[in-house]
Length: 575
Image 1 (tube, helix red, strand yellow):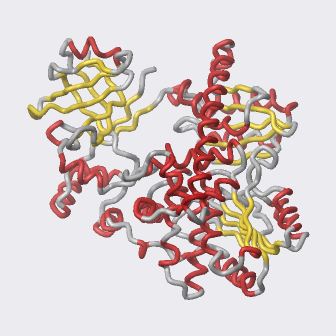
Image 2: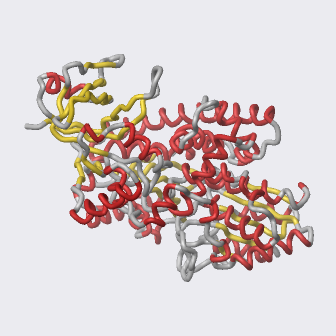
Image 3: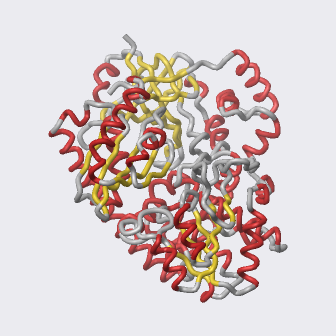
């Protein structure tokens, strides 16, 4: 598959601004241009970006209903009512539940505080009848719903008939009609003046506890040790790492590295991160999947049990269980992916349209989202993977850049039982008799709303560099831009007309990768690079033909002293 390179040279205006910032802040040209491209160009914005300060967090009382929510919580604590903390089974939901539980257990006995995570296969996501029945049967009069609830109109109405108040802390897009909750904390609701829209569900829970603290004269230091959970949710839920999230992520990573909770320390140990500097990508690829595996394979409640562990011994035991679930999940994920590939290869008509859709009623509901992501990567088309669950068809949809799969699925909502998610990922439930009609309507929507070039992977490139600009100064300036994530992505660069210095070679078990030693016309410095799976370019490169590269800049820590290495994303030979 040929990638499309999306690269725009800096404008004259950007170059002038870059020179001004370089002089004022002593930053490299490339980093100044990266900041300008990301909308960070005045002194105050640069100060906040490079020095994210907890004092820069917004006033939580700017949330609609925050005063109402805090007053109701104070009343519940004062009257010794029983409180249930309710959250979804994914990383964001379980970290949110753990955060609010940990904070509130200072103020009430264990008998008056409980938590609930719905079972993925029996209840699905969000607030369920079983969850409300459990609350009623155990004498709960207040539910705090985290990372869910914004669409639970019928469920919250049901809770109200049982005399249970509900406070919703959510970050998903609300519908026009809001649920009849006592208070709804969601910055995305209409009329909200809260200045930051992209908090994770755990982040909204944190703001609720921050407001409660402010109202009751509790020192902010009581909240600081909960920030590791915020960082884990921000990285895992793929929310923008900008504004308030950037502040929470930076300080949360600090907490995670210096003094993590016992539960998170258990996970850090079990996935081999002890003694290493933990980054956002460590959370995404190692810590997050293990927490998620609990909800996918068993019950997310086990993840909360682990996150609340009080001693290293129980944290170790619970982490090992979750690590085993993760191994099982990986095995199941691989088997299901292979089966999905086999179905698609057997019938070429299934991949001819603009949407790839596969159904097998035997597949495990816990891995279909992962499989949909794999199909999207392979075919570079929106993918929907469906299975059977509780006599209904359950599915997970994933999309490609530029195609809003949420809007596509919303257009079929009259034939769905339920759906929810965002632009790139959606969960759906429908009756089996509607499956064929759903396929037809989704295909028709994609035909109308998806351009052919959206099915070609686009590499968004920030800047072009000459090799004389790739040095330790650039590396240290780029480190100040950490942590990377959505809307502050790791910079992608390109360089034109580079050549082999003469010592590039094929490496790897099957000689599938190229270890490159490259030069360009800006200096005699040889730059090292690695191009995984790109052996097809080797003969042309060794023939000294010039070529263009697209890459990220990495620090290679292998050996005695760290060195700079380019991680090649794509190669284009010059003709």
